[in-house]
Image 1 (cartoon, one colour):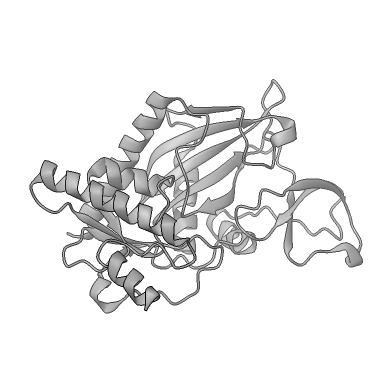
Image 2 (cartoon, rainbow, N blue to C red; image 1 turned 180 degrees about the vertical axis):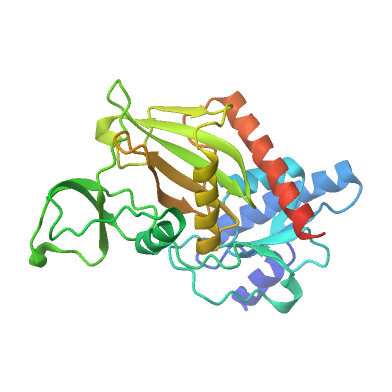
Amino acid sequence: MAALNQRKLFAGWADYGSKRPFVERFLKQIHHTLWMGCQLLLQLKRPPVLLVWPEMPSKRTALHKMARRLGWEITNHPRNQKIGGIRFADSTEKGQQFNPPPIMRLETWLNHHCSDIRKQTLENAHYQAFGYGISVDPLVHQGPMVVKSDLNAQHDGKIINGPIGQDTINNDSVYQINIDNRTEDGRFFDYRVVWIHGEIPVIYQKFKRASERFTNETCEVLLLNDQGCFSETEIDSIARLNRIMGIDYAELDVLRDAGSEKIYVVDINPTPWGPPTGLNHDDSDAAIERMAESLQRAFLESNK
């Protein structure tokens, strides 16, 4: 009976998942209700609806911030009127089947075909898109190489020397070339590329100290206003990679190797938090604005 009463209490706005504590879900529903009330007063009608499935994004995600900037309700509860939908599942392997309830079915769901973002899956797609990959054979590779988890967002990379013995191979890890993405002052940097339905509205440049190289910690983050850091050929390859991976919306970590000058996409995250910690307030606001405009265009195009 208690579970039934909770479902009735929470019906209508969003499903935050039964794994969350009751009090947390209740407070989220209250916050959602207050936001909806404000939007009804401001817009004099129900706000446009962005459907997500199966999970509700945290308010710290870039998607949540874009929706709020646009004045859109974001929910995984059925709605009759909706702008569009995004598959949102914060897991590395999301399953081949994507089956939202019939009342939530749309002609277009962004990331509908994004089902697997493991490093090995990315490696296979990278080779098809760029003509080269990042993996090495640890049994024969001579010198430094990077070993990291095949799962997404583990931030557990480390440098080891190859070759290694068969008995030390970890089947849950990937072995990659050691990309030289150092700056002149000894820091390491990567590009965080925001991809929304064929557009790159935002590129961040993230700097890390040597001790933080494989972590999510940064010592400086910049919003790049002049986005001439990739050639047209490289952008075409990034686009091919995203098509192969089934990506319509995601953030990509891209490294450029100083020796070969090649770029490598080392991570794809379709459920990112953002903008990154360390970006100043004005640039964070500008980034959310650019991303929101791009997201709005994505659904306008999809609904034509």
